[in-house]
Length: 184
Image (cartoon, rainbow, N blue to C red; front, top):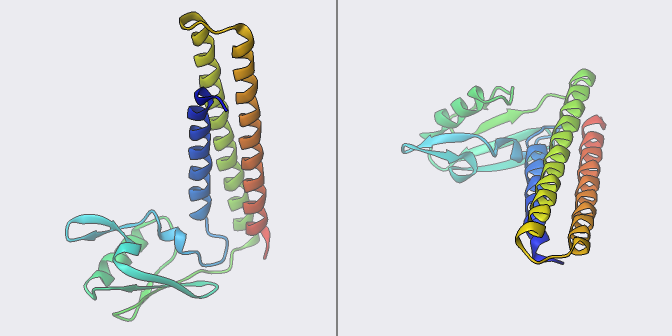
């Protein structure tokens, strides 16, 4: 593969990774410790991910258990969860924090499925923008470097194939996440 294409493939991979992270944060009725990934707690003046100050596990399909390594962190973690957009009220017994995930309603599942589709569309737009940037860069090459029109056409075709591949990956990810959310 041409090294000039590698830049654009890397960007497309990053877009896919970003989409996967976003999907990891969408809860589908089951407890998923990744919903805590974006939350930060104040740990001696430093915003720190919950996973770095506590043990996080899933003892039951709809419960996350958070056991801080320091008892003083219970309140800070609880506050971070309550001020987040998780929509779950934590319970604690002084040592452990429990998050109980309610069963999702049909309406909420459909809302989440729409959200999944929207995030998928945004990822596709990002991939197409990367393709556009690549094509623009290839056109500029013909003015600055000694490169034939055929070579530029080959680069554009290869970039289009990459784009198609990543768009298909996005569609597959959207389909899988939607299926996961709509499965009761």
